[in-house]
Length: 421
Figure 1 (cartoon, one colour):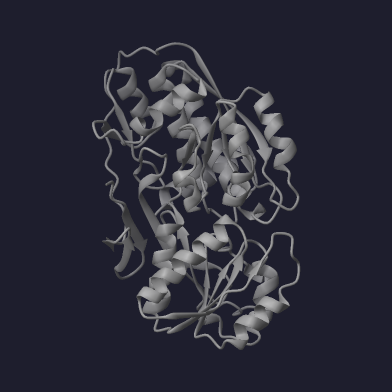
Figure 2 (cartoon, helix red, strand yellow; figure 1 turned 180 degrees about the vertical axis):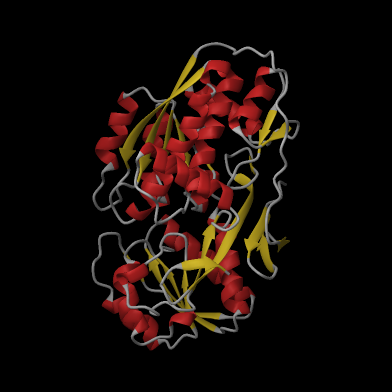
């Protein structure tokens, strides 16, 4: 059995349990580097890898679109900068996933497939990805998500063509459930998005919280496209819980004012689908003390990456980012796809997919490297590269899930923005 390493980024250690195995969460990951090899290496041939994106430009996760697309563009620039050495050029075709209400994917996925892409990066939402995974993988194209966390993908029949750089909700649910219990709460209410992401994450939060001795006293659901949540809020508040977890997407902006008017903010818990910097969207102090979880290393830990990403965007004349959620995972996805194409000497979807586990370190016999250039030099020199990404070591298992991941824990300040806890 492949073990998963959970790393909770916080000031003290946290226990998580995955598949009955106790895991000690530590404060950070240590990534090892390597030196380029064989300066005289020559490219295997001229390759053009075309990647489409189906990331949320619209819909209830639209706040994740800018950081994800920025991560894609930054990675593509680095691959292209080394094209003269590798012979691998990269073309990105940007598209919109939308959500299950506006269904932008219904026109965007056929358009991207019509562009003869080798891989489609997206969607961010697990529920949206499940709407078109058969269409993509059935066409022999890789679907690679930087943000899908539903456990449904771990057993999905995807022809070996689905991969993700975000960990399954098994991990986030256990970290969040244990956090809520550690904070001294004995009863928990939840408001849950009724899709594979929301109900799946709620399940694992519940299991962890109850295993720690707590009780979930209310967990009403709502559907994508709903605009009023009075019934769900009333049901949860009537149960008088010690804490409330909001397992939602952008609908949280409508939910928050009606919850905090009758419930202390420091007993609210957010998840990756709604953890955002709200700033002056709410009055100062509205969310002071609220906490949340987000897969991936913290912005503080990713300081070098986010600074470099900011500099890249400024140089390109692009808008500055307000959020960085899943930027690193998107960056890593593009780097991994490019390395796999280079290792395969091919841009055919099945050929690239067959090398993704290897270049992530999943084969167990690669040489560690932390940049596209260093990993490419290993491949060109006849070796096996093991890419450790900016979002974590990744290391795909046989179903395309990362076997090593981090869960960041955050807390809101008086300015309604979050920092590492």
